[in-house]
Amino acid sequence: AGSCADDCAAITDPAPQGRAAAEDAAAQAGALGLGTGSVLYNDLEQYTPGAAVTARVLGYLEAWTARLHELGYRSGAYGSVSSLVADLVDHATGTTLPDVIHFAHWNDEATLTDPALPAALWSGHQRVHQYAGDRAETYGGIRVTIDRDLLDVGAGA
Image (cartoon, rainbow, N blue to C red; front, side, top):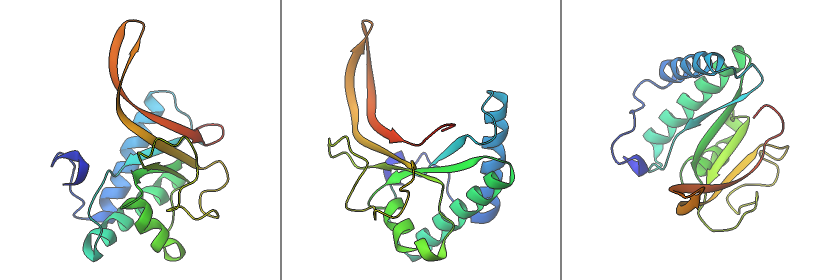
């Protein structure tokens, strides 16, 4: 269930689901005018890591990344430092990593570093840090609830 309150799609067949999600994302991006070279992000939310879950998540994300690359897009992944980031870091040498990591750690620190992220991973303009969430703010007289992010992802992201 994680942070999506039982409203997330289950990963039951990782590689086909990852490829299909990439194809759908690329088609939607193209329809919106986002050209090849753009980063397309997959929201994996918070989950409880473990052998079976981790294997499904990593298999899905590898297929997502590989298919996006075939279609000319860059891969981004959003997740918590305690689940997705931990799994990617722990399996970095045997896993195709996404091109950009969008990590959630609500520590109120607008930085791109985190103890969970080794300096060598995603170091070349490849990081987005969601450092605060569920903040009520007012813009133009309209009150909205938003998250706060700091990013360094280069062009086309």
